[in-house]
Length: 131
Image 1 (cartoon, rainbow, N blue to C red):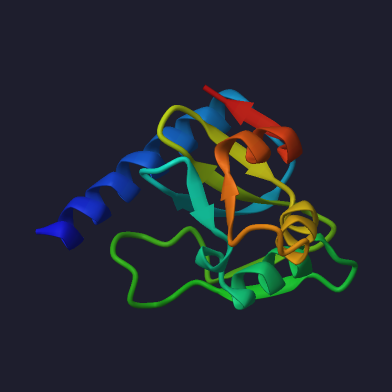
Image 2 (spheres, rainbow, N blue to C red; image 1 turned 120 degrees about the vertical axis):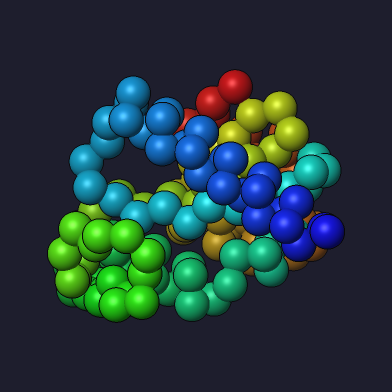
């Protein structure tokens, strides 16, 4: 039961984020969505390979990604290539969500003062805060 509830909550936040992004268009970018039911998100919730991919999307080298062939529905195309693009970790807290640049997230994680990013600190380092 818990797994299906979590998947539904993640899907709902994905839709909310999509609507926000369409109403507030940015240039091309990469987004890693996370959410928490508390006022803190463990830093290790964002995996190293996810941070590496976000940073690659921002770089001069870029990142090339092949969309899975087993995805349901019609794919728009086979490959994505992001270079010099925006990238954000998008964190949904209970009352709002934030978009944080991966470099800022990493700097906060490296401080090692805490094992998680509180909602208050997330607001302070975020590029966007959405209620």
